[in-house]
Amino acid sequence: MTTAFDPIDLGATRLPNRVVMAPMTRSRAYGPGAEPTELMATYYAQRASAGLIVTEGIQPSLVGQGYPDTPGLHTPGQVAAWRTVTDAVHRAGGVIFAQLMHTGRIGHPSLLPDGLTPVGPSAVAAEGRVYTHQGPQDFVTPKELSEAEIQQTVADFANAAHNAVKAGFDGVEIHGANGYLIHQFLADNTNHRTDAWGGSAEGRIRFAVETVTAVAEAIGGRRVGLRISPGNRFNDMVEENPAEVYGALLDRLAGLDLAYLHLMGGPDSELTAQLRKAWSGTFVLNPFTYPDVTGHDALELIEDGSADMVAYGALFLANPDLPRRLAVGGPFNTPDQSTFYGGDHRGYTDYPTLTA
Image 1: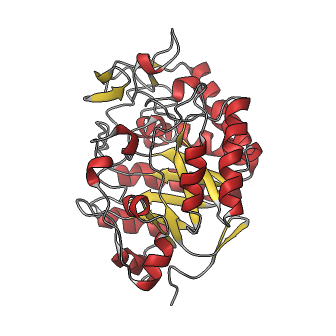
Image 2: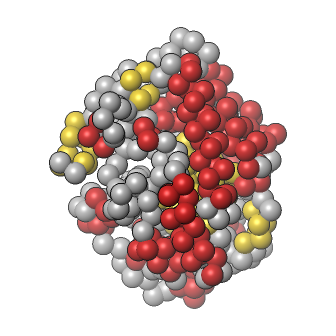
């Protein structure tokens, strides 16, 4: 029987265990230039016993930023600053992937340089508000991306992946979940396009397919993971037929030899099982446990074959040595949910109902 503490080959990298630290937005790039800080190097190095660390969302371009104090990977200074983080993790024996996250319509002009505004597949504003340095602000109507701007955005992802390798990351995870840009192209209520980037399932998946393909060509598919969250309503998303859309997406990605697929599990366990069966590569599952955090019992998902690896969010915040504690059954520090369900933006996870 396979357990969470058996090694696994992830692409070209041998991992010591199958416990993943899930990506969680921390908003700690306080300095100029959206560059990582020494605090971030300490934070990730403390959790290097994870089989795999996936970083907080990192914007691949200026306009990709949707929250204050989130880091980028599109300038030389950012690349150099991330090197201090990856070096610290590697010295501690860890493996770390950079999560590339373009937030699309989720954001606000006050978070961007003068003249820029959030963008999306269609000019449809999200219901709700976003935290800014000036306090909560209503989401604005995004600028609809032109064909040329879509192609530039794909290139931005590929360039950020190149930069991730330069910065010492072992690979990248493309964020296609949680209501951000790639998810916005996949969903019905955010993609009203009638051109080749919308309409049918094949049109809706095109941006995701071209982005993942470009990144895989840039750094090699075995260094690339993709995160998805079918049917997730976070950030005001509506998907009428996720089984069709995500089935088509996985079919198109099958030949890229990706490192893994990272699924944000939802209440539809049947869909999770369908996608697990459809994906022949490494399957990482962030299980649906809301309102509880993912706990020790989630390790059974590896033992029964539901997943190859299991991702933990909140429990990793409270327990930096989480794999050791899981191996012996605890004890576990209890996460302070006020720090990641919006009580303090710097402790906010990008998917509070499902991350952990």
